Image 1 (cartoon, rainbow, N blue to C red):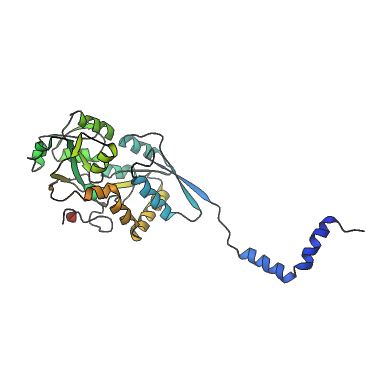
Image 2: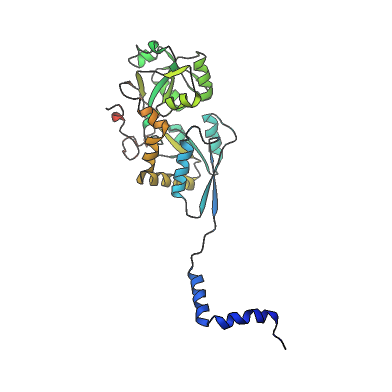
Length: 307
């Protein structure tokens, strides 16, 4: 009687592969590394897209998340469908316990409302402000020597920005608006005289917006200690630790400094700091935990104007 077809297929294999070979194959299969299942981690951000011409915050966040993820993890950045005011972003984050990250200037209230990752995203450079003014109006600022002189002019700031309270605490007069876009429209419409912007913002924004009516004032440099952090919901400690770990890795391997000093947001401002008159202001809202004296996180601000 002929053998069943299945037996005919298997017989040659049994004939050609001795038992020791089969055992060897089995051992190799058992010792082979098992590939872990890929895990996708969605992270929402306050941006609507990567900022052009060169993104800073989302790119740095992705770098930190990539530096702290496991080999089988993939980070999915989820952009917001629309932009909001700072106050709205903060309110949204307070009620959202998912993986959601915003970046904003720190102060005592925000650090109570949210979980800060206390690694300054601009290494303390955000402590310096130059003034955006309208072209042909430099002469109005040439006489400004101190805070008292500046208080004779009217500044513009965001309604819910920590800077607003700091500037007002120093006696400066301000008009406010909800968004940066509104403030640009207002200064162009001569609703106020100057718009303080960070070193990492002023020249970059003029280029980004292709402004033709505004320039950076030539002589002054406001200073009050502060910076921007990544923030997450107070109950999302795993995400906070993941970002913190990634940022520390980037500091240790030098990639954060490389990113920071070569980014146009920073390089465009650092090149223009020399020979400016520093007007020093106090910041009564600065949290005590701000690492202003830790050179690991904070650059030596006194050297920024050095030759």
